[in-house]
Image (cartoon, rainbow, N blue to C red; front, top):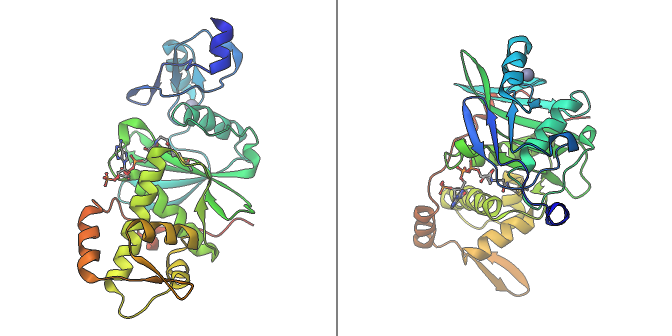
Length: 281
Ligand code: ACO
Ligand code: ZN
C-alpha cells in the first residue's frame, strides 16, 4: 500500500487548519517526510509555518510577531491589501506557501527554487491582522512572457470574485512593465474558466465602447493580454471572421450585449490608483 500511495501520489494531508478555517485539501503535496504520518496540519496564518499538533501552533502564535505576509504592501483599498514577497528574501515563507498551494493545485510542479519568483499575496485585513485570501506567483524573468505562474484562492474564499481580482492584478503589473503577459500553461479547469471569464469581460467592455474598427494588436496594447489569448477568446465568442487571409473582429452590438449578459459578474475591481509598484529589476 505504501508503495502504491507513493506511486500514484495519493493525497497525504487531508485537512489543514489556517486562521479561523479548517480546510479539506484537494491534492497531494510533497511535505517533508517527517510529516508523512499526519493527516492534519496546523498552519500559522501569517508566516505559514506548519505544525503537527494544535498545541504547537498555539505556542507558536504566542511568539510569532507577524500579522501580515512578509514583504512590501503594494496595494491597499478598503480592507483588501496585496503584499509582494520576494522568494529570495523570504525563502521559508515562499516554500511554505508552495507546500500549502500544492494541496489545491493538481498538475503544477512545485518549484523549490523560490528565489526566482515573486509572490503576490492578497489579504483581507481587520484588527487581528491581514488574513491570506489567495495569491499568485510570478517569475522575476520570464522568457515566455508569462505574467503569472500559479494562482490560488483558498477554498473558503472561492467564488467571491477574488480570483478575477488576482488575474486583473497580474495584468495591471504587466501594463506597468509595458509588456503583454499570459498565464503559465497548463491551466486547470477552474483556472481556464476564470481566465476565460476575465478575458471575455475585459474585451467585451472595450468592444462595446469602441467606435469603428479595432485590431487584435490594439486590444493587446490596451489590456496587456497576449494576442493569442485575445484571438482564442474572440473566436470562442464567434466574433472573428477570416477575410483575405486576415482575422477581422466583427462586433455586432446585439451579439456583444448577449455575450455581456452571459459573462456574469465583473468581480472585485482593481483600483489602479491604489497600486504603488515598480517592476522588478
Ligand atoms: N464552478 C464553476 N465555475 C467556476 C467555479 C466553480 N467551482 N469557480 C470559478 N468558476 C468560474 C466562474 O465563471 C467564476 O465567475 P462567476 O463567479 O462570476 O461566475 C470565475 O471562474 C472566477 O470566479 P472568482 O470568484 O473570481 O474566482 P475564485 O476566487 O474562485 O478563484 C481559482 C479561481 C483561483 C482558479 C480557484 O478556483 C482556485 O484557486 N482553484 C484551485 C487552484 C487552481 O486550479 N488554480 C489555477 C491553476 S492554473 C495556473 O495556476 C496558471
Ligand atoms: Zn507564524
